[in-house]
Image 1: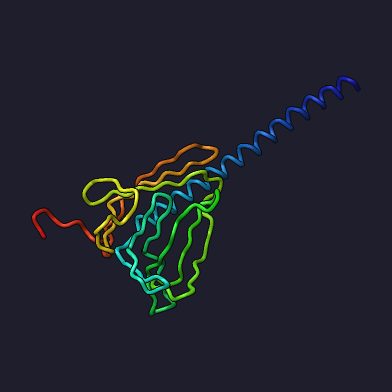
Image 2 (image 1 turned 120 degrees about the horizontal axis):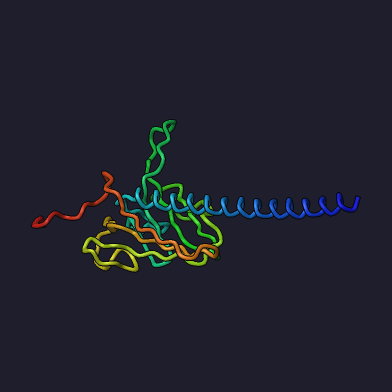
Length: 192
């Protein structure tokens, strides 16, 4: 009986250790999947940016992409709704850090009426930092967008985003903005 009890205790300890390890691996796998989804979503938002300025709640014209070092607001291609004929397939969204959560705010319309409130969703949690910079048509990096004197419909060539996560450190991605039919192309050499 004593031998059987000792073997059972050893087996239980081993199984308990395996269960804890498996739980930790599942949690880590879930975290990696969440990070992959978040970065994929951020890349899609940026690649679908279009050069469509909007009017804010006060009726003031706002640039197609407004960028700061810690957040941005942009117009992007949205999702066409085949059931509604008279609707735009563009949407306006903002990305910024709120505490330790990266939030995505989406406005229902492009040109907002007074009192317009965006819907908000969490893109990723446990974020310690979110930094952005913008590559201009001249090849120089900017910490804000648009640069002084630029038109409201000029988009950067690329956006670099850096996420600082508590468990993985810093992740960096550079996303080239696509040449959608709405995007403003840089002028050709010698063309005014």
